[in-house]
Length: 471
Image (cartoon, rainbow, N blue to C red; front, top):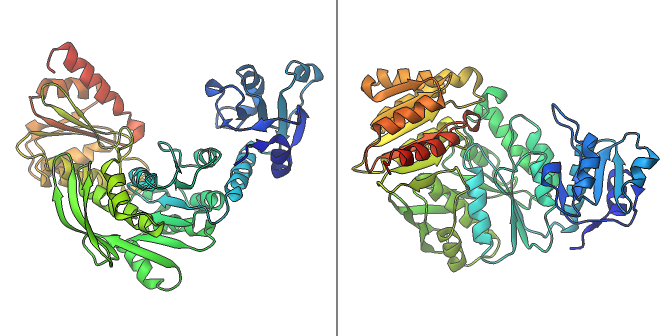
């Protein structure tokens, strides 16, 4: 696919070209600190800055083109950047969306694009689907957590000679996925589940389902993969049977694609995938039932796109997790750290604690922090985490955060020894306590919402252990 010309972009956005009108845009960037030679810089507006004000810095850093919101530019300023291009638009973010949508449309509706959303497991499901599809197709995928109204269009602008794409869509409020899906125009879509993430903003799981279902709005011919084990999704699917094309998958409830003979190990899982046509064995290099569900979803999408059993098996076997999501770090003294510090909801906390409990014959330490955006539901959901701590027989609990006190109080109420519980006032205190109590072969789970910055605990703990020669 040819790169976009500045004339095309001007026509798409209704912008005014100043300077070189023969420029070509291959790569796009919104951060002047990350500009590479010949990038097109888009000056977005933030809460505390106006990206369009940095157009000179972008050109000086090597950008060939800047797309900025309309402003007065003096003739001498233009003369300072010969052969470079300025495109003036009314709204830089809207321009980004328009350019990305145009790029997507160039590939046509026959181009396989899988849209992925859900409360928990979006990123790992996206990564797994992409890894399987890459066994047959050159596949573009959302990198990291680039799943909002800036990250998604920037991802689509990376489309070149790809044969498929897997695009993640996140949201905090209603109508956000509506915007994303109308840019991406998925041909297949996934809703992994409907949990309690962002319930403080949306008020109920039913509203969360409504927000997730917005993904259908960008689909010319809706085709949805349904998690049959999710109560709201399975009920919605039953109510809407025949209205759209669906494929169901699940573990506990009858579905089109199911997992049988699941064998959970400390560092991997095996299971037999049962479809209407055949059954075959899968090896998942990550432990836990959630990754069995992710695998089933990847299988459903891949079978729909014509992949073979062997390609699916290889794609799942070679799947790797995005950093800070169930990332297992093993120290020389046998201590294992499960770094799951990127994000947290009640459902993902529950899953992580079950996974921790599967490490048999070893002490389990849970280092937990607050879950964000829960609103009035925060006390209740943090208490439920405390119940899960005790239910899974966790040996030591270290918490920090405004709402983590509810985890602590509920764990005590459920009978956990108070001497095995710490409510810390800082991450530094958590690290010191963790270093003090660590024994060889311990397994440590570190999990909280990303804003708690618990990833620093992992790094600092490892540094302290090395300094004290405990590794």
